[in-house]
Image (cartoon, rainbow over the protein chains, first blue to last red):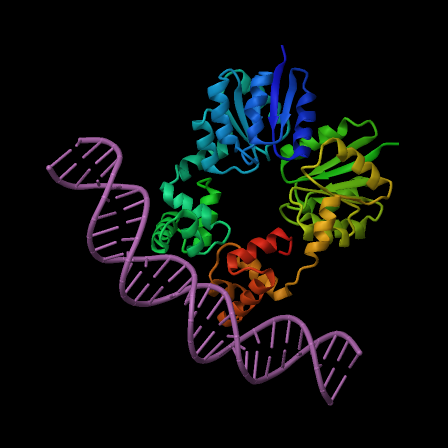
Length: 202
Length: 202
DNA sequence: ACGTCGCCATGACAGATGTCACGTGCTGCC
DNA sequence: GGCAGCACGTGACATCTGTCATGGCGACGT
């Protein structure tokens, strides 16, 4: 009995390459490939794969919310996150969303098929290095507003621009930013954005 | 006669997957895989591949300077850049460094083997979309110092920190930054960094 | 009912930032 | 030689940013 797979990655070349890699295994079969988060759920419902391999960074819906969608609508399909960035927050949020495994793209190629088989067998697969980091970094200390404001600050917007975008007062934006800067241990808006991104808090 | 390939990509999973993808083609053979820019040249000298597929973003030496190294030390090995980001400056600099082709990672997987064959045949392979962008964005308008200062500003450093790092006066750093901000059409240090990065000027 | 917490806002302040004018010295080019 | 461009610096200025104190409002848990 072969394990049926769905691949979701926004980079077509990587998607095709992973398909070729997994297709070499006799017990694995790629039944669907999609390039955006919005296509994941329809494809899962159409093909009923055993395991869905999802990237986190994708256009449309990101892999984590796509995971939650899949778990709710098709509980028989297990989800394995395959992503570039080993951000601690990603791992935690992915597992909370119901993912069965989390693999970073710089793990050896030979291990991927094994990870798929373990996930299919009902086991959890988590990069041990990452798991400890995730515990250290923990959950985001930022409040909802602080997160919003930091997100809006990512592109280098000024306080005034952020305030207009979020319908807030300039002073309020500065307060939220200041608070976020303090919580991230930064001295600076830009630094705060960087460390928050690095921890997967945005 | 098979075409002998070298793969360089920092993500082991992608590397292995590309290897599997290209290995499916009867006329292609992957003879070496490396995960950093510093390993490229030794591997080329050791295995004499016909075509080297290099990523731009790699630890150690980046793919573009690695291209230059390879062209100088092993002119028979042609270089095909395979990268995530279609930054206009990357393309221009890659071609200047002697690359024969430039492929973005979201091109269809089926085209990669063709690109390899064309490069091997002595043709140039360039994403047409990207080529026009490259002409529009053109060469970096930033001077050497402005580039250095912007690079130092990437991590959110303050003016004082940048000045210390580059052994400059605070005022000079501010001047260079101001000039870079003007040239990039930004209103802001952070914006300047973003647009400069997007154009591959850093 | 009370305290706590998040959210919003205001006002004030110091420090950082971006701009401008101006001057120096060096280099390359016509 | 004269000119343009770049690097480097100074000083001054307006603005932006980050911090702090303070207050009101609503939600939540005890």
